[in-house]
Length: 121
Length: 156
Image (cartoon, rainbow over all chains, first blue to last red):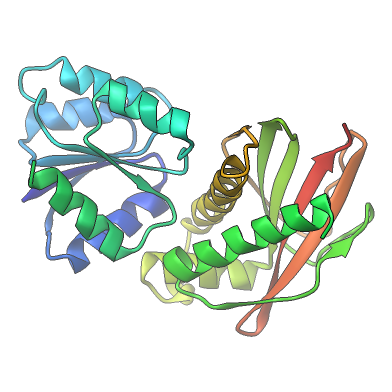
């Protein structure tokens, strides 16, 4: 399974990649904002996108809306990893087209559950 | 328990959760200290602002050595190998602490928005706030190091 991890924090990208590696996933592409994420997706096929919300250039919500407007990614599973975890935030992310939501801080078990929940759909 | 004590308690819990799950370090909480002239010993300060039904700042204080330890532990590398990653890691820790605090308050009906984090690194400096604020500091032991979180609340 191949992932695209989009986060402006290099620390958070490394933590997510380390977590995915621990769960047995090795094929991972990185991007530091939504715009770069779209460029990476044009060049590579991925099975799941994991994105932050607050990012420069193009934030996570605009990135998800853009992906849902593209034939190639309109059905690609998207997980959002963020500290924006109030009820209104979750509603906004779901409306934009996110499939599931991981609140920071998280454990590898939470990550595993959310990936499995999204892939089981 | 006063409102301020409850707030610092929520902030302390958010800090412990971040360290347990993302930094992989156990913290030992000290007694909160209230005061407007607090100057925790630190070379690294992370700040996240918040606004809404309450407004103010969440501050995270640490030394360079402890910050390197934190970044190394988060990234899965020895502290000595941490180089340019430390400011980003401390910003992310502060962001997660403030986010956890925001979530805990949301469960009690308080609606807050939080800012992006900023990190200041240096020596011989302290942070002064122009507004009339109340400050409550909570110290923790992390192995041999002391770290602190502070709640800075505007008086309104």
